[in-house]
Length: 67
Image 1 (cartoon, rainbow, N blue to C red):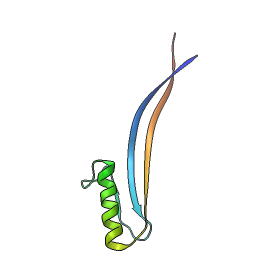
Image 2 (image 1 turned 30 degrees about the horizontal axis):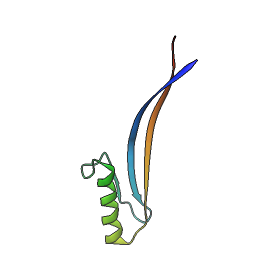
Image 3 (image 1 turned 60 degrees about the vertical axis):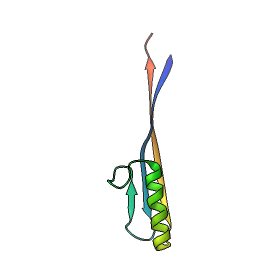
């Protein structure tokens, strides 16, 4: 059986401060692209000295190809 894939790429990108309740993600009004999120992360770190974690996820569908 042949299997086909469909890749959607980056579907979420989210940053969260480990020291306070600050967060930023692609779906916010501030950030539309991963670089926008990273820019906000750098601003937060420089302003507060806090540690920030960033998570990015991708999506891929796998499905059988009928002969």
